Each structure stands twice: as C-alpha cells, then as structure tokens.
Amino acid sequence: MPQTVPPFAELLGACQRSAVHLETRDVYGVPEEDEDFAAWRAGHRYDLDDRSSWWNTFHDAVADAVGRGVVMRRARVVSEPASEYIRYEHSCTPQNLAAGEDVRWLPRRLASDLLLPGNDLWIFDDRLIRFSLFAGDGRFVQDVMEESPDVVKRHAEAFEAVWERALPHADYRI
Picture 1 (spheres, one colour):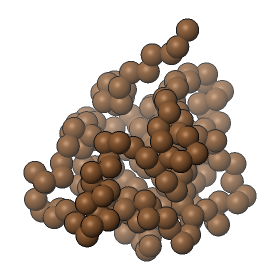
Picture 2 (spheres, rainbow, N blue to C red):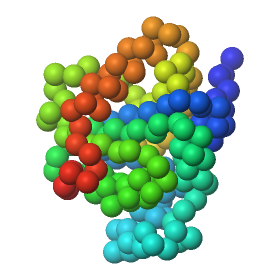
Picture 3 (cartoon, helix red, strand yellow):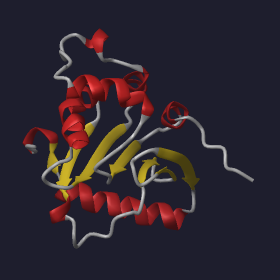
Picture 4 (cartoon, one colour):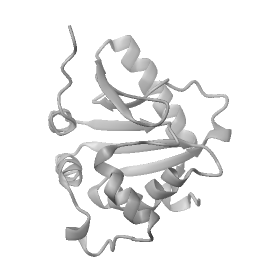
C-alpha cells in the first residue's frame, strides 16, 4: 500500500524544536521553480527589500516555525565548479535566510570522508525523516517517510557531520 506523506507545511507546523534539511544534488527539476529558474537564467534578480515580489507560502511556513522557536538549518553538499542550478540556488539563498533559516554549503571535495545519505532529506525534531527521491535528471519522484529511531539517529549524525564542516552562506563564494 502506498505511503501517504503529509505536505511539508503540515510537517513543519507540527515541529517543535528543529527542522534540518540536507541537499546533495547538483541539479533539481522542480516544476514550481521552473519559472523562477528561467527568469534567473535570463538575468532577473529579486530585490530582497521588495518581499512581495518573492515571499511565498514556503517562507510563511518557515517564518512561522522560527517564530515558534523551531531552529531551521539547511546544508547543501555541492560539486565545484558549481552547476548552473546551484548558482541559482546560491543567489536565492538570502530569501531562505530572511525567512529564518540558517544555510551552509559544503564543497563535495571536502566531504569524501563523510558517510552521506543516499537521498535528500528533512529531519523534524530528531524523530521523523522525509526523504525526497529524485530521478537522475533531477525530476522529483516522491517523498518517503521514515520514523525508525535508529535510522533517524544515523541520518541526524550524518547531517551534523556535514553541518560542522560546511561554510556559512555569507562565507561561501561560487
């Protein structure tokens, strides 16, 4: 029987202490980002002072969680030189920061001795994982939930190893 995975905003809304996100891909093909990515490729850059031009429901969910005391951290493991998509993500990261996330970057060349999960993931309150599965070309396939305490613990440890070594967004240059 297929697993029903609650929407991200619902999972984050139930979160009480922490939400961490590990991204390990250099290319994502997420349809809801296609328009923004195409505009970025054409030279468009958002004005951070004009929140109404870029703020969306994701930012609302993050800001609400952070306002409740949830610590939100995102770590990105990236190849260098960075792919075009990673350069796009880097340019948009100040939006994540404005919503209340803390974001760090780890060049893949500095991660060779780390044990990394096979899929991107969110860990909520060190008790629940939402794995995001992608096809080889970056297209999103599905989300899968995991609640086994042993699996959650191992993935939380992997995230922390990346986090400790990664560079804060302000210090990472593409």
